[in-house]
Structures are given as C-alpha cells and as structure tokens.
Length: 98
Image (cartoon, rainbow, N blue to C red; front, top):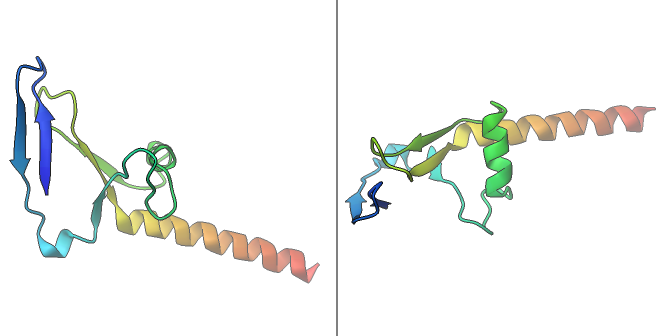
C-alpha cells in the first residue's frame, strides 16, 4: 500500500510505501472514500461509531502532518454489526411471541 502525504507548508508531496503483513491484512482496512461504503456503512457512520466508542479505528500520520490515514479494525466493526443483528432478532422474536 502507498500513502501519499503533503508537507504542512505544502511545499512538497511525499509517497511512502507501507507493507502490511499478510496476517494483518484482514484486520485493518482503510476508511472508505467519499461516496463509497465499507460493510454497507458510509465514512460518516463509521466515524460516528468510532467517536461513540462502538468500534475501533486508528489515525496514522507523521508528526506535524495535517493529513494522514484512518484505519478501521474490522473485528470490532463486525462484532458491532453482529450485536446489532442479535438485538434486532431479539426484538422481532419478542414481538412475534406477543
């Protein structure tokens, strides 16, 4: 994966090659680009879930850099989705029993 960054003074742009080990390839994913989705969720929704502490994300950037990259910890996102699905199934089961 390549990360493109711009200096804080915007005088130059750099490109860094980042090798993600194969065992970590499925655990961390880049945030989706605008108008794209990850597991059906928009960037905004993923960021809101992260801010609420419901999923785990990390922001990587060089010291002094304005921009960086945000990664989503997929096990936490999938766990959250499973929890929501289980809650919805419990609500449906209890309403059908009534």
